[in-house]
Image (cartoon, rainbow, N blue to C red; front, side, top):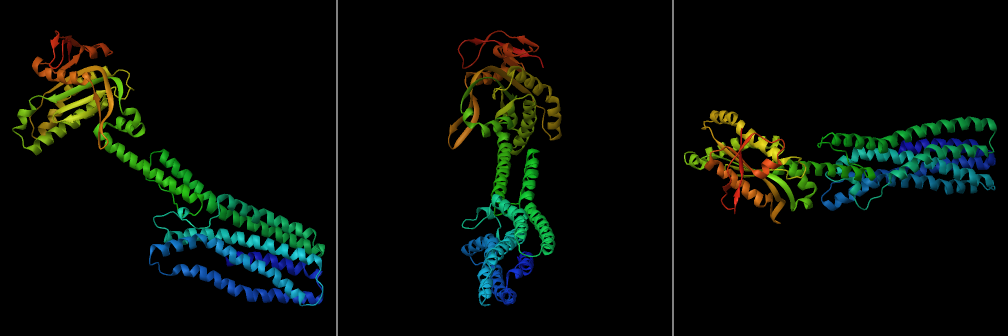
Length: 484
């Protein structure tokens, strides 16, 4: 802040000592110079003391949350306090100098009433603007990390803030309006032309210097956070959800960065939920539930339902310890789930050695029947690879039966508000389960219903079986034994 005041003072004192004396009598000129020196000697020490008190009181211990909140507001208000202290000194100089001129005993030239206050205001505007930006930048780098841990300065209530638009106006005033006014002031100055030209060059140089300093500070306070947000947004667009933007700012960018970080955290949480949830209902369904939950509360769709289980698993469990049985099932389901998902299916239920998969549940599949048949055939074709892996863990080879049925079913979430489950409901599902159980009775590994055969394109190689009565259904149904 002292450097900023010095810059403004150099301009002001130089102008006043060059352009005001021609308007004064010899006695007034002596009184004018004495008043300037006396005012600076008397005003600066108490103003510096007030500013030092405002800064160093922040070093006091923080015993409780209320004290921390007060100090957080004080840190945010620091640039305004500096502007108030500096502005007070500048404004008090006007009556002080005029009071000194009055003691000279001579009448004051009317031009002095214009030139001196205007020059003070121009110098004050430049000094206070550079000082505000400097302290704003310094507190952000030095104080915010100490006083704002876990909270954004932009969300601190009861503090004074200068908006981004306000900063732009302040920068415009210091970098362009004030130098222009200073040059205009020279046009009506009663000082010699040669003196005006020299001082005009100095004013132009000072204006350029102030513009450069203000631009650098504005870049740090405005342009830099915009670039950080842009880079972070690009990273999120590329799938990087670990990115974070520094939110230690007291203006709109602080709130924006805070909201951006909260958004990314929400995306991370959603990704975690989707990943975890997807292990239970399938990743595609998990994504749909998270995005359009209302649409999945019950929709009737044409689906193909696949059931599969291990032949003789109940008897085998009698010979295995529970932990070994679980290990066997994990290996089996891991393999079969991969086959189902590779064929655009969703493993909906895992009940013991039983597996229920849905094809076309999301309404995006063009031919769920063909996909279900392809998955069933691949499940049986890949048994050799599965059994080889089971053998490595000391398990006997398994055999699997697969049954598929196609038809309308209500697909969506059912249950109570405390416990919901995504599944398919309807006779199509029940019939698919019955068809799978008949693979044991009829001695076929893969059986499909006539509705699945009719819906599948292209038709698989299969044998049409005689019509048969299925337990739990009235009438007979036609089944096809699909070649593996």
